[in-house]
Length: 199
Image (cartoon, rainbow, N blue to C red; front, side, top):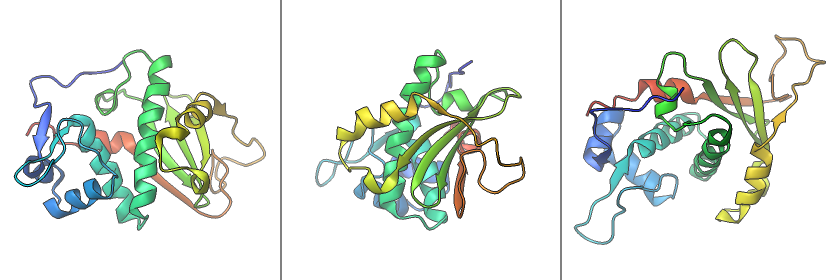
């Protein structure tokens, strides 16, 4: 199911990441300084040191930048990125070899989306093949602590799918997770496929 990126770099400098993402370096620095993206390869450690980013960090940047374009605060983007990593681990237990972004770059890859419902609940939808998407999560963003202490709660919420509301018709707003007022959706699969990892 998962595809691995081969014959391509596995780490990038800030300049390379900015070029690949077609974003100015200062926007990426801002996301690092706000704790939205944490460099996996090497963080800056004082004057003259530089950050180095993994392939996964490139996906983190791309998702965070999409959320920021939707005018969501950096703190919310940081929470989404953190929970997305927990979701990856949870899915990996059921789909052997599932790894972001590589597992989403195949044309037959699952369709993964982040959904923020009514401005306060975080869901993920995951569709494989032609089946209806499964809905995971429902985490209350207002109660999410900034620390990793929430990991057990996150794991518990992401371990089970949420049953879609069958009372709603297929065209009703906010489905399948059931939002009533507002809904923000980010297609993580499309973002992963659009990453230009060739360097």
